[in-house]
Image (cartoon, rainbow, N blue to C red; front, side, top):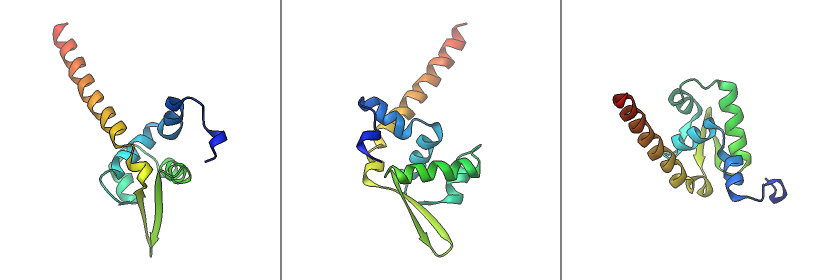
Length: 110
């Protein structure tokens, strides 16, 4: 990634890097530690192999994760900058949990 390819607005930069739901979910999975391709695919219900491969490549090109081959195993690990997304991902998690509570409460009031 070249600096000239990045938006001027920092929020837009973040969205460009992980704005896709699958990228966010992949980063969330890798916050738990290094995983094999098959482990990531199994955890992300609904993602196709093609999309997972594409998003992993994009995240690798952007420096968010590394790809390491050990024999027939392909392992993915977050880089330091990838791990720095932890508070962002946890904020998404907390907000989603709170929103589900809100929706449930609103349904009871109807």
